[in-house]
Image (cartoon, rainbow, N blue to C red):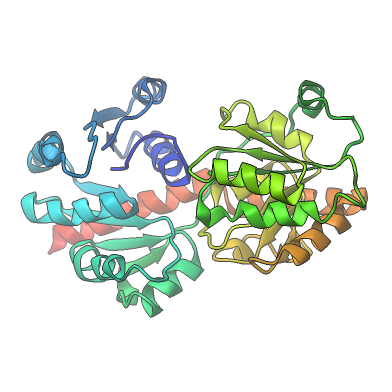
Length: 366
């Protein structure tokens, strides 16, 4: 159960796991609680996965949960795997209404700061009702224990992974389309434009580099509620940013191939799929040392880590890499090797399949 299919990291992972389960061991249904793109729904169905669309428009559309409740009470569901706070809460509630043997909540990270009601909901409602509470990084797991007070035995760390793909892309085509010189330095990011991603910090860092790199451009790929503010901030700072909006998955390899360095300036993260995608593309990465990022990138080995909310440190790291093509290649190659070894989608699926069966066998024995 997830908000909608293939929109951001959590939804993408939930969809890919459902599509990738071993059909000799599992039958899978994806419940999209809000509207999903018709193309994503059709792709899942073509792959042999049932899709239950609830099409909730607001949080008050309680009656739209009825088809899911009927399915859960039919006895045909052995494991309910929910993703993100909204679905996690409803899964905990449905555990009262339907006798599903195993209920799993999957937390895909948040700041763990403020929001007392959310901490209470995680600890007192969700954790008490589910059989396992999944974290996407060891850092998140520790915060769930120490800050939220969730019992350690309820929490499982399940590493994120991405599908296998070869690095590549036609960066020269994108440069031509954007009017960028073949030798112009390009920094980029691919993210949802929301406060967590702190793109304003990256803008401030890039603005510091224009004197030494007059042809520099910063490609911002993605959209979100922060876009208008960030465009105004780029103008105010004099940052040479190009806001390209949301792009299809098929376009991302060409866009990444255009970028000399990719940056993540987030104020908090779990284990971001975007960073794993950049690693798979063998790109040199500068990222803030927050959440689970230090567990996938060793500073100076697979990328460069800097403190959050520090434009000066971010600018210094970017400047160093822009001036050293050999170091960029070394970091990018090492990043891809690590992603291939440790953060593949099939590994994530294998861990979850074993967890489903282990929890189901334990429930059957009770």
